[in-house]
Image 1 (cartoon, rainbow, N blue to C red):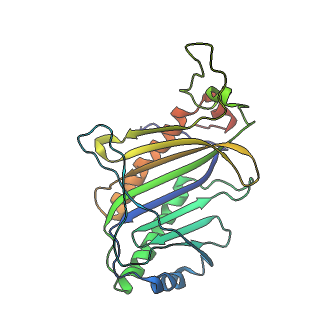
Image 2 (cartoon, rainbow, N blue to C red):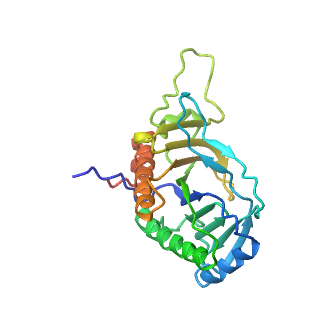
Length: 269
């Protein structure tokens, strides 16, 4: 039997999203955002206009240290991203001419975390609706070139740790020890790391940085993003890649964080 992935009763996750990137839909223009909204408005009655996300591609050149390539597409299509928001404000579908994202976000402390096994079929349904709209409007078939899954975690100061001198209580690989006696506890710490997925199927990116929430709480924001190219644009292969990315995020989060914090978050597996 395959080993089960870790699970928590009270994970510090405040946002998750599943997304696909594809070649720009050159026929897609401003009116099509409204036409698509008309298709989903019963479930997503609100919207916001946001700046577009940049094109990101994981590359595996011969050089050892190659960053994920960022690029700007020079095409005559609208440079915007639309959020379509459900009645609760917690579920979003995001669309731009080369991106489709479906995500959950935590708005209140009492909000229940939406697990991956719920958001994945929700993404699948919304993606099928979007593709059907594109077909009906003769806007072309999206050619997926990258999948991405992201988990955003807020680890609040005072909940299992009380200063950056105690970061070893949060991050398992951080010793907090020095070779001399000159430096004391740091005021803040940023951490960045990346890991290759098996068979060059993508990468896991980890970023941790200090932040302040809207209600003025001091936190560590820990972002884990898995990104890579599926075997094909077929939904079967896209969902298979999401399963791989999700496993690496959950296992990576568990390896990175300390066991005492696992107890605090109610680890079950």
